[in-house]
Length: 154
Image (cartoon, rainbow, N blue to C red):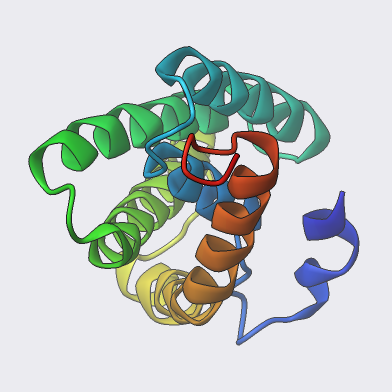
């Protein structure tokens, strides 16, 4: 709801921040959270956002769930650089999300040129998400420390 009410007002051209995708990616890169919780949260978040927003719910469910699976794979392969992984995964899946959405609207009959959608929607959205990546990662990691304390912190 925070994304829909407040952060939808921060726009660059037609690009908007997808904070829930950033939160899902940040959760996917945390070690202490069980994999089942990550997948369940991404699936439920995709369903909720899919029903709230105007786009079909299956697009957000697929993108969010695949993003978590990709984070799990990336976290096993590159465990030492979670911030770089966060930037990479958030940019890749934000691009895929917007591109699949654009293709879906073209399938419905809207005439959207690739160059227009890339310059006015995809690039500004990527810029906003890159700016929001670091604060979201640090907030999620602090919340993770409160909810899932490690043995050293107890």
